[in-house]
Length: 289
Image 1 (cartoon, rainbow, N blue to C red):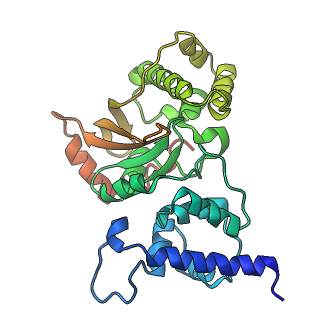
Image 2 (cartoon, rainbow, N blue to C red; image 1 turned 30 degrees about the vertical axis):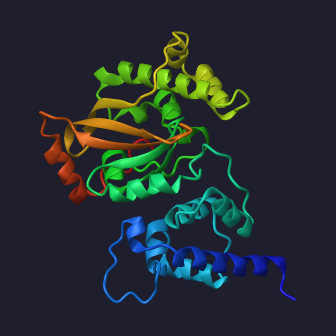
Image 3 (tube, one colour; image 1 turned 90 degrees about the vertical axis):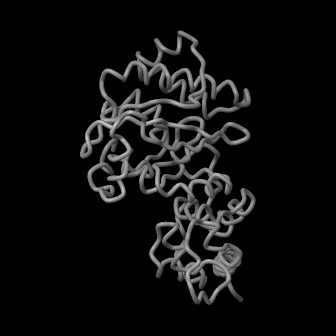
């Protein structure tokens, strides 16, 4: 008789195959291509979208793979455009605890992922209302750095901004006071919008009040304002100064935002952003670590 672990691995593989079969390449921003033998995505396409090796993903579908990490489950859920219930089911099949909302493994609404996949020529990313980055497109990584490796309170860029000097290196020093004030006002608005019993925002605010006199002073001002759009100056380590417009699309509950960056009119930023595709991420991924 098969043990429960092997049964779950078999179920996990079957579930992955069923979700893969229902997705068309166009649904995730991939070309359809000629002579496709399967109606949905190929295994190698899912692996690429999830940042996994093809061999590893093949083993998962066969039910012979090792227990996937929480980060891999989150990546697979995004690659396969799973609903919230389907994502939770995937965690259960992998014998992993379903992560609390708000962290870097949070479920991203499939609609936001669909929009993100179509923004191929401009930097874009999905973040939470507490500024935890959930997913970035390659151009956002090239512009802002890879934010996927942060865990715990460090996952929030607001936390890193007020506690880690290196987090500010991408921004001109003259702009730091304005950025700080905007972050605090946005955080106050986000915290007030959440349920009064929510502990995630309260924990972040309490940590920052204890760790950063700058944050505490700004928090005492009681400024409140969501960051709906912004004009930012960035000091890219390779391309130099870049001025961009940062635009936001909010989810219905306000807990997630799709951010995309466009060149500021009247600057040479359009040409600089065009260089990002060829620059890659080699000079920026280490920033903020």
